[in-house]
Length: 187
Image (spheres, rainbow, N blue to C red):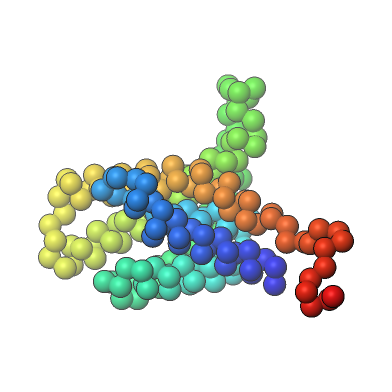
């Protein structure tokens, strides 16, 4: 129950960041996909069921937020969550450790870049799906659209690095009461 509450809190926090904070702070024409970054960080341990369920929640929120592409996010984000839970552990096992810069790059620092690579890969696939959707709706695929896709992927990968710390804080926060503190119901 506590884990479900923490995951829900992390998803809602990322929803608030993506819809309210980032549009006011960043003046870029493209915003990073904070929801995808949060989904990747939540599924780092390889729990596919958690990834699918969290992706379904994120998809519902995104459909409610965007509203122009009905059911697209509800179909894609559970698959993104499942894929992130599958890809992240495989990347961690298969990427070689840097031998040349072993003193500079610690295993902990190296492990922090795995979510960025996973988010970049999944963001690219998601942007390609959106590009195909736009193409089917008679929008020309131009260099501008491709550069927009690449910038969105880069921004999402960079945002994933920072989202790791926020999600880690939310998942490890303690909700215990201080000793001696009583609630009004116990008094």
